Length: 74
Image 1 (tube, rainbow, N blue to C red):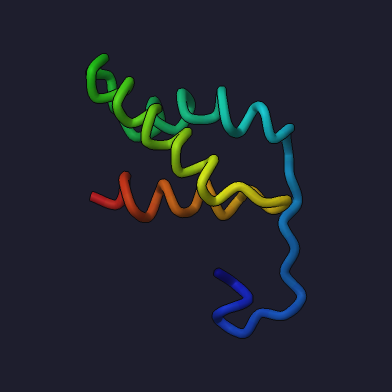
Image 2: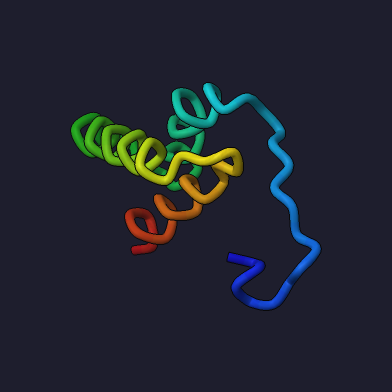
């Protein structure tokens, strides 16, 4: 996204493993957003993991950004 906005020297630096971002990060993200409803959390987790897999790349930050923009924006 930053490169599309003309920032050329931007690099994704993972602070944790891909596995953590796919399987564990979502729980922290939902808690940060105050989502405590079990059904909603389970559905959001399923959507997050699906998007993560669809946008999967070496710079999997795209997956996280896609989820936040498409699902948690509201």
